[in-house]
Length: 298
Image (cartoon, rainbow, N blue to C red; front, side):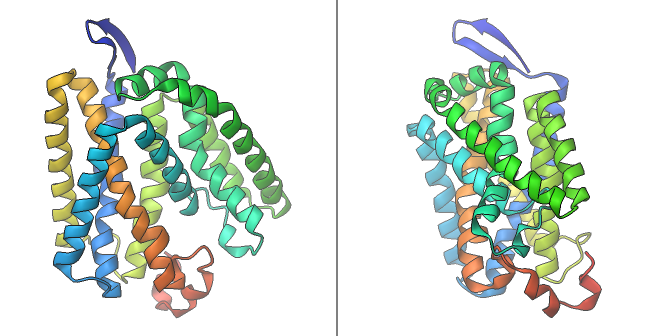
C-alpha cells in the first residue's frame, strides 16, 4: 500500500498485492461467517425469521456505530477480534487441553494479537494513515499501543516456553512462519493470510465437522448468505465512494462491514454456542468422542 496527498489529505492507494489480498479476504475469509445461520439452526435456538432479523439488525447497528464513533468502533473491533481470533486457536497451541486459565488466556491473547497488535506496530507507517482515513483518531492508538504490545510479548514468551516444554513443534513452526509473514509482508497481505488461511479455514472445518458435512459441499444457504454479504459490502463501498477515492472506499467498505459482522458472529461462536454445547467451549476435546469416527481425523 502506498499513499498520496490530495485535497482530502493523505489517502491510501492500493497496490496489486493489496487488491489480491482484499480479494482473498472476500473469497476465502468472509464465507465462513455464513455458517452462523446453520449453526444456530442446528441448536434450534431461534426461528429463521427471528434470527435473520436480529443478525441483520446487529450488522446495521455495527455499521452505524462505526460511522458515528469510528475511533471507539475500531478499538472495539481490535479488542473483540483479538479474543475471537485467538480463541479459534489458529496456531494450534491446543490450549483447550489445559486447565491453567492464565496460560489459556495468554495463548488466546498472543495468537489473536498477531494481526491486531503486531501488524499495526510493525507496519505503523502504513497503518497510521489508514486509521486516519477511516475517520479514527490515531493518537489514541499511539498512546495505548506500547502497553498492549508489552503484554502481547509477555504472553508470547509464556506461551512459547510452554510449547517448547511440550515439544509442540507444529505450533512453533506455524508461529514462526506467521510472525515472519506479519513482519515482512505488507499489512493487508499479512492480515489476509492469517484471517483466511488460519482462522477462517479452521473455523469452517470445525463448523462443518459439527454439522457432520463435507467441507467440499457447502450448502445453498451458505452460498446465498455469502453472496448477500458481498452485495452489502459492495453497497457500503459505493456509499463511501461519495466522500473518498475508490481505493479508500473499498478498504473502508470491507473493514467496516467486517467489524459489523464480527459483532453477531462473535456473540454466536464465543458466547451463545459455548453455553449450549461443550464442543464450542474452550475445553471441547471430550466432544470429539461423540462424533462419527470417520470425522475424527478432519
